[in-house]
Figure (tube, rainbow, N blue to C red):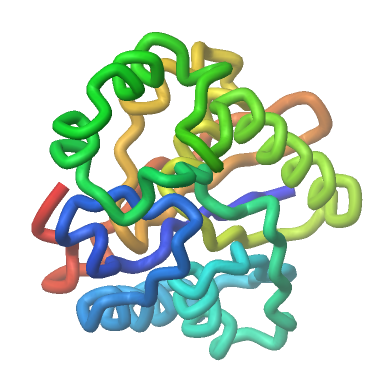
Length: 207
């Protein structure tokens, strides 16, 4: 399976540096332009299966891509971003000011600790691993596109390369970026990472 993994376009929360998690935030105007540029870039590719997280920022990005292809857009909630529970919609500075002890717990052990109503890192990894297994089982010889979230991409890369999940932050994923994996049974290789040159003037200015 050729797996093309795309991060959704920019959202207002990305601009404001707020934790989004599974909050259903739309694309910003720049995010919509990024989705259009991404769709144009991929328009000549043979994309057999196009799958989106069921959150609207990913779905809107995927719809733009799918318009150039005959593939029916499918949704998979397993591709949602990490749930951050009561922390969603807030900045880290706001959370650190009001809940410093909880932030320390999360930083010390994100594997088994989650904010109230949220998801642990191990739960998140297992969810992504299930998605990978599912789509490979049904489409082992196809080009499959996932339109998803930065957290998903970082954990996916750590999972397939068998490296510590703490290193997920060492892989940067810009809005509307393209990452690609080659999946041949248990052999998974990273083909490209965070490709964004096609965005041109629509590249995200902030990190």
